[in-house]
Image (tube, rainbow, N blue to C red; front, top):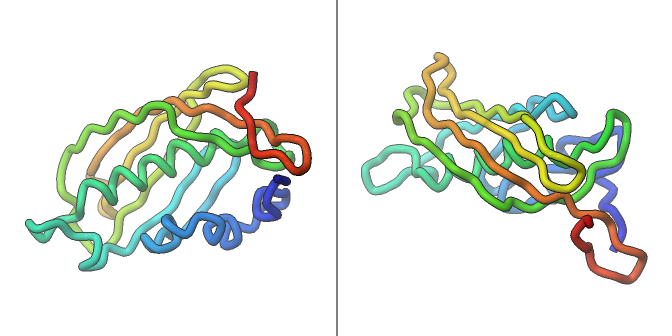
Length: 153
């Protein structure tokens, strides 16, 4: 399997989002994605609510997973993205968001060539903290043609 065209530089954020039907179905809107981090927003809709009529924690967790995980896919500025999988994700829920939108940000904080650490947060648009996360992610290297993706060694 080759690297999807949406992973090739220059990045097309709409194509990258389309590569992940789950994130697209959530309604995420990319504001920026580069080696310094990821920033995107979500317009909160009734479908994002739990039984308490608040934003569902699973939606927040998905946003944090994406915010923490997407920057991990950068190896170096100007190079194609690599695939990655989540190893751990620890979330602290702080408060229910106020207002119609939330913003997620994430950035790499350390790690090595294959296991990388990152952190993220979700805030409502008045700046109030909704949730934070830390995670570890495994970068995957592309396999040879006609093979599946394999883990980096």
